[in-house]
Image (cartoon, rainbow over the protein chains, first blue to last red):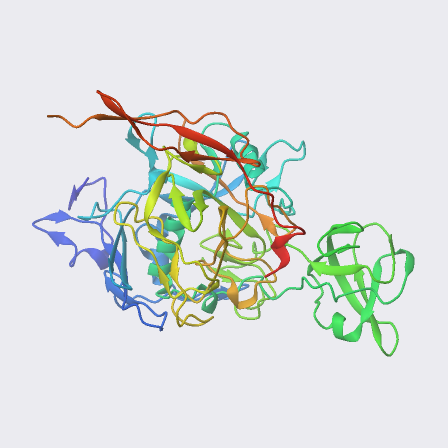
Length: 459
Length: 54
């Protein structure tokens, strides 16, 4: 609904008064970017975002981000539900995308632009009405203490080692409107990010927790009993840092000794080895046990002052970050993405959480108009289905690299697959907001696969 | 002549971790085109944990 200038109920921000007044009516601004489809992932700002600047901060650094004062972005707020789950509330907005060959445009606005769509997270399928906002989990999801519900709470270790079906069930156990991250929300977040930071290379803005370790060669060199340390070679110790989360197992990622501990110091042991000291109860370590990093405990970015930014560094890949308050949107642990099923590289999609089911390749899921690429690599082109523009999956890797085109990796396999996004702590430069991993089957789970709780504004 | 009504079979109960559902070949009748659902078992998955290969 457009509102007239001068209404006592509505104050138009000064910076938008002139360009957005049409015949005496106020029209909400459109923020946009365009891309020529070339290897440079930098986007050209269009519409009202021309000339705007967006910067990510570090710790308590105050940075310039013009989007902090822009519609939609300035209205993104913290929200806590009745369970104490912490979310980021994103206001209703419209998205318009165009495709011309590999070239793309993205626009986002509170105005219903010609050719735009209302993301389905703002739609109540049962009552056929629009919804004012959607709640995206502020943190990587954790499991409730009673083991029955997916949560989004600070100070919790991420839930992992559960498959996408289990995550869906845990999310829905919270009640009406609760779901896990889906393709619709991913599209919304990608569009918000691309428009704000004007790049497809999300890791060039914030690297995320992507340079951690997950290697079977990181082994204990000494057996120890009743200790809070693991002795490793100097070379192995150099990969780790105080404050990082770790696990130790007899297998890589297995957690047989423990998961969910934090490194409190790294000390000299002898000329060839160092002691990595961790918190918690003492354990027994056998030579050959494997140490590895894990996903970060939630809430690590609470001290980051900027709307988006990282702990300690935006570029070292060793720390958590937040995008508009959403922590670890890429890196850390992969996030299951619901509403997308793939069979032999053909994606079938749904945008109604009530219909979500894995391995469903029939109505009410719909087949996309394009086939995903059948080779792994860095993505150079995403598919575009004008009927289902929310769902952009890789269709080419030609020329792709960590800093070119979408600047993120893509993995796939034939057969029946489900989707996950973003990468984990060991993904390095493969990670990012366009990193689609369409390899796993519905029963897959591991220490690096997690999720995110979402809630639609349904009663 | 009006287009025939398209009717999809409701998705049957299936085990999402061991089975998959495909749209079957359409069956055309005098009044409608009916799309059945076909439930199949998933093929055996790879040995080991494929999550760590990348």
